[in-house]
Length: 260
Image 1: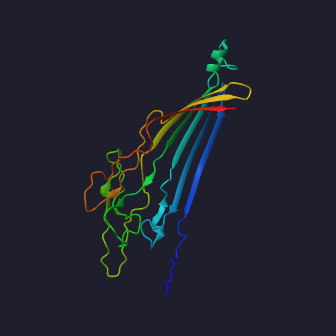
Image 2: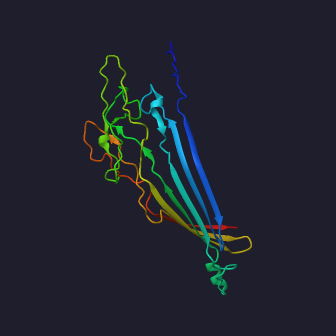
Image 3: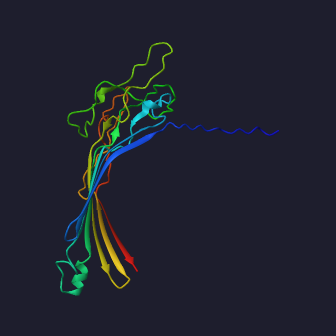
């Protein structure tokens, strides 16, 4: 007699929501002598609910800033055609020299942004007794958590976030701490990428393009988010510290493309 076959039933809940509002400004300007630039600025706010983040009984508790919410982003993109070669102010008389110096374009992308949001969490706890079937436990907040001069050694005040006291009333529901979602912000960031390209016409239908690209050209350190996991049962010297980077160091790459 064959064994009965059982199938599982999946459950899906429409509880996650997200909304994005922003003010976006674009300025484009073409100057004389082959120079132009574009400026983009956005002032934005992204809010949403992330299910099973801390309390599956109350999804509204997990409504707040989304992890990729950046309040301010400014991007400046200048482009400059170098004034050498045929049709430009500086034109060598020698044909070979003209081929070498003409067709060069320099470009850059400069980005300044505010920090990504985060919130302190608890480590080594199971406040709702759900066997870890949530993403994070949250502490109670006793003060703002901001420090006057944040640094990688102390980005926020971890002493402001403490283990919640379990309710003592018989039958009272266990609870998460009252710390909101992504209430703190990480470091701001600045980065510049630089490009240099040259287009050379070899024949009527053939051209050669050379590109040199430098990412994070100034090798600027872009800090990541601090360690925000607070273990109330074991002291950790890295809570509140930033020990990671959010961008690669300077990267240089070259490319050569033949079109025919």
